[in-house]
Length: 417
Image (cartoon, rainbow, N blue to C red; front, side, top):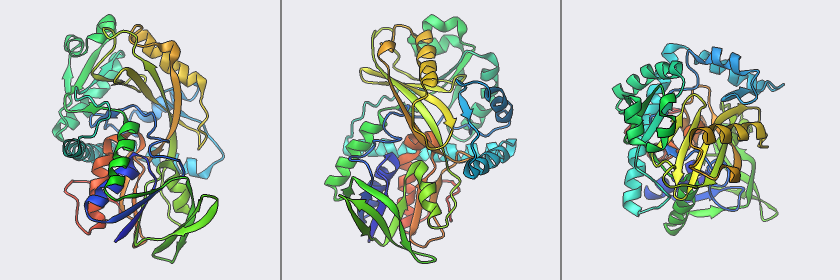
């Protein structure tokens, strides 16, 4: 059976890999000239099961009101005359109840634990290298109120099997000595030893090569225009490839186009409540090995994550809900540099920061679409928001099971099941 995977980001490439391992003939289509060059290009680098608290929670509406007037706010909502944006925003507010937030957190944790295990097994099986570190993730808080608000979600995560331990400042600095200069400012911390970090782009491109060696075909430089379809089946995908219109056909299709999944799905009359959340990152060379961190860090007050990628430092975060515009907002870029340099002035060459912005495919609940659509041969693996790298292997393994007619071995509310 032939499966056509739409998208060669980390979710599309892992989907192709796990489908091929199930014995399917797989073709991957992408508009770029290689894998992992859009949202997977320069993300935060964390495999963060512990980053499971949904954006939509009871404290979110008040925070958003406070942030509306701040151009450097961690989550920036820029209202537009866009019914898709407002539909997403209203659905987001409906998810902000305690019961919905708890339900969504459970889905995110369950998928995260499952996915991390599949990543570890994959790494052991094929020996893939991507500057990965297995030193855990440490959430630190310089605002006492933020620390207090993190205690309940951390407890819920522990109950679900994610061992996110609450620790004091001394233990935080013991785990990561790079925080010693700001020890007096840290109100508290949590630590998840099983979490990891690594370069998502390097992983994606390395796995794409492995997949190609295993028989997966990659059609790059192919712009996807739309579908040929009946009322209940997809018959083909219209693309422009090498300057020519072509129709690509397969028995089954998997939609893995991140934020652009929603646009393409609308051409089928299929509504996916996905909206792009533009995230930013900086990448800088390490300046001082003694001052640079090795444990992956999360600065929850500023919504930033820090990962060590060999001789580079990656700092990523913030979210801007302003449509599909990928232009850099230099105010937000400089905010990341300023905050990071303030905490760890000698860790990196901050003046040499490379800026990047990418569109994360956010759902109002932060729970992705994984599973069947109402078209009999179209499957979804999209809408992972900030956790596409974290959830990619588990989502792909589960999706391959669903395509094969099996129920995945994880407690998750799969689409269409």
